[in-house]
View 1 (cartoon, rainbow, N blue to C red):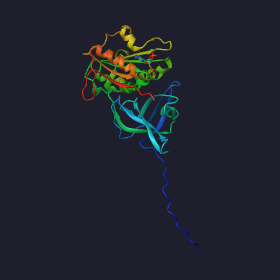
View 2: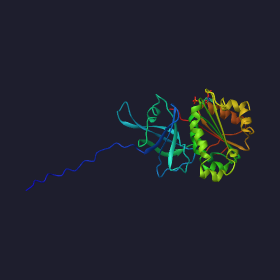
View 3: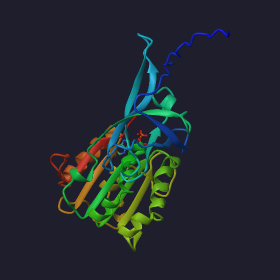
Length: 281
Ligand code: A2P
């Protein structure tokens, strides 16, 4: 008789999985300081174009040796209707998160907490005729979402996006989004004829030669920006604005908008403009 060896129950092997894991589907490097990437979208995630979520990677806690999530706030750069989620990020060589995040590749996993929040949403603004999106650097991200959102063109007659960066290469991501709008079937139905009449794109650089040089704040103060755009300065009756950039830029522009008579709004108290700080690792 054959001896029957006792069957040992295989113990479940504990494979460490990321909490709230999403899979990277695409990564694009724009400059040695900037990259964008797309990840799968949780089926249950609903968000309003312009909002941000916390994303990140696991890291080892130096004291306990335990793995714990390292998360940062990132604006969702894709519009609310998109099947995937897109993010636009800086690469900081010694930044705790982006020094590692910049090496992600399709198939890798990241952590995404599915709780979108933020003030750069249409609900935080009163109805108006014209909307201004003011960005510096990676502050373009929430506008990459809002520019691809049909509601933006339903709510406003004119959409003006300004983007100030140090160097020309840093404008590439934004320029490609603007170019893609012209070929977007969904938006074309809403925008109709005369794309450039409705959408005005004003890219400027401050540290490298380009067709338009200078900080947007200075270009507005001198009146040059309005002359270039063929528009009038902002007024509280018609104009609405969203600001997203580095802290100094946000503060300076906020002050300028207040001088034009615009007031800061919030989700619970919509007014004429809203502000959010771009993520910096
Ligand atoms: P500048 O080169 O004159 O500092 P950063 O990469 O440091 O976040 O800056 C992004 C862009 O924002 C740069 O072109 C920078 O111009 C510009 N910037 C920085 N501070 C301000 C500000 N207070 N007002 C307007 N633009 C600013």
